[in-house]
Image (tube, rainbow, N blue to C red; front, side, top):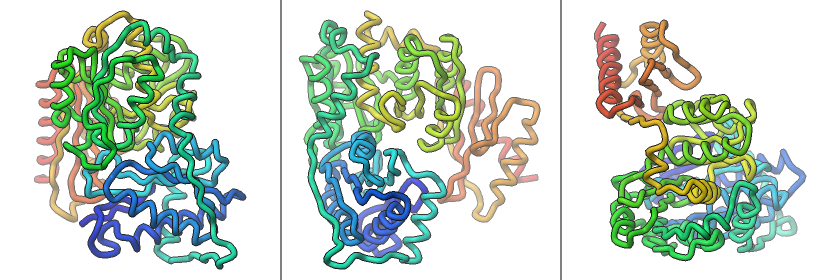
Length: 461
């Protein structure tokens, strides 16, 4: 059983002992701690709550809502929702914050509390640590019977989210309608099964083939939207002769596409394609994290803009986007952040922008993919002896490659002429994750193996 407490929230497997998994006691403790913190920061007593379709979702929702009431907070319950929908609802409701009940791409035995500030953005490092401190100290005063909070349910935000997307100048439903797309959708039996087809219909897509779109939380495959988990969708696209397939994760903040031949568009290229379209019409910069494809940098430069890299993590990407005035950004895992809507990964706005781009290009999706710089990524890890000085090891690697352009804002990233390698230590186990990219699969793997050999040599000597 696992419980992980971090700045972005509390996640863990359901069941087991308190402090060792995500039990009711842990849910209550950290919900109360978060509620206590935002009470101190805001005059609003309101909190927005939404959840994905996990089997444990209703149980966790009951605990969260009851706990917030018990400390005098009023709850706006969106019910089955998405992460980006809750993010836009928080400021719309003038709430003090929000809680999304989802473990994102983790398997069905997991759930989590994702914590939002009053802007509808993930809380920062300082706020996250404050929540953990309050929770561990149990420095919480519960309300008397006269001070209990109230609960209202609001199922209007599906339409409000769609209306916001349709109002964007760069979203063109007429162009999408005229393209006559036939699209297959895999929503891993979570809330994307409600939201994605509804958005497609609103955009003028008349032919939608749905697979795994029943929001019952019974994930039919690993919910991370990777090629090896999307074989059913690929087969459906080919069988129905669809123009493309769309896959989202359980909370609908990650997005990837399947091409008409059943092959993957590549989750790294979701952000690349959307950014290319946005940059054609909007002057400004782009941001992605250090582990994302170099193709975004290339496309950004080709459009006369500047690319910037951020540390891994959505909150870090958002911070950098605000700093450099980025008009589009995100993460290479299929996470699109479009500030014209809100500062959060949003698969729904990504779908609308991508379909407009594809419709106006007049190309098949495979042709659009072929128009972008071709890179291949390799992901490896090296296990280390517990207690080894990993920071010292990374410092030694930095010294070895001191004459090669590199960054230390998040581990160590080394930028060679045609390849790059990003080394990051795990916060939970003695390993170093090694991400590399090159112009061919072989070169991406070769540079990773070279770095692994360097690390082993440093350890031995």
